[in-house]
Length: 162
Image (cartoon, rainbow, N blue to C red; front, side, top):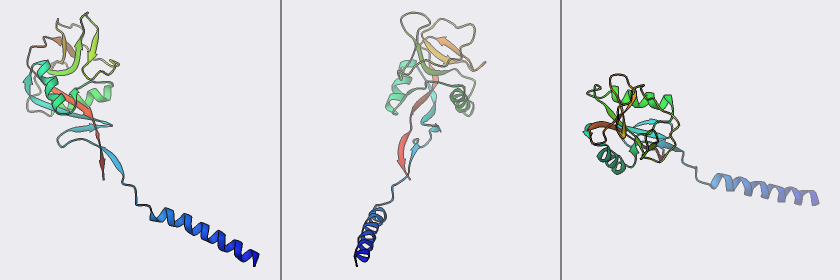
């Protein structure tokens, strides 16, 4: 009798544990997602803007879209940005990135506040405070921030439910 009582208690305990597992709703899988029209690489989204703007205006547009002018932190990330440009209607134009000089020369900052841990400067930078990708060599060069260039925005991917 004592054995039967112990087995009954054990069975009730196991049933209770299993019921708790089975009664929980299935967790929805979350994936990183970019807004429609943006290209995703890992947890970042990228969007090429065809209309030329001054550097500050381009940054403002990217802010409105939930991001900043693109910061680049690896050769792979840079390849994605270059591919976006090459797929545009006119890839023979200079393009703003979010890198700009501070008060002193050669002290650079990304508009999103991230560290400058990757660069692709050409050997003969022109004077200027803002950084563009030159179409003729795909390398970075200084330019006047008041020039109008096309630009690439970047933002973090959203968490989407699927």
